Image (cartoon, rainbow, N blue to C red; front, side, top):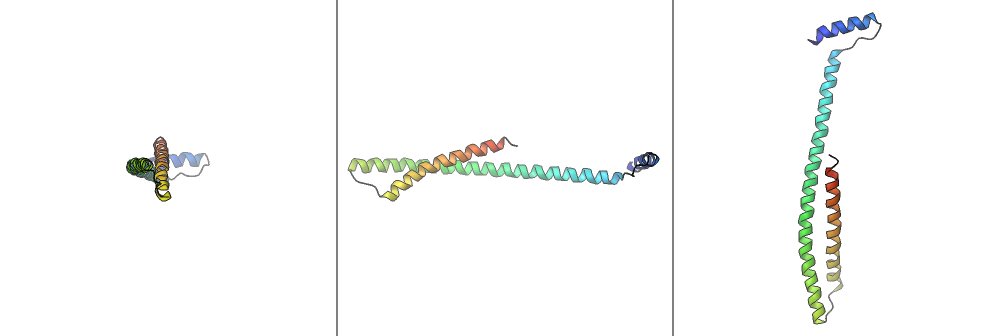
Length: 118
């Protein structure tokens, strides 16, 4: 099929002094283009899948940290009611849990923004 077109096209191009065109190269170009396009799509889908997994992991971590924070706040209240001071390491961990929740919520927001890219 392409051979007839190639012969006619080359005859026209010869008449006008233009280089011959290899229609096989066009087929090769189309195959390579489609392969590259499919490859890019696969990368994008894999990235979206990994983003979803990260989002799910952060949500679980936030849930766990909220439990830690709730228990930590309860411990702080109990210590205050008893008039005792908690060890600084415990207070730091309670503060760290609150900071981690905010940080991971920010990560989730950024992940959701990345979905819009695709």
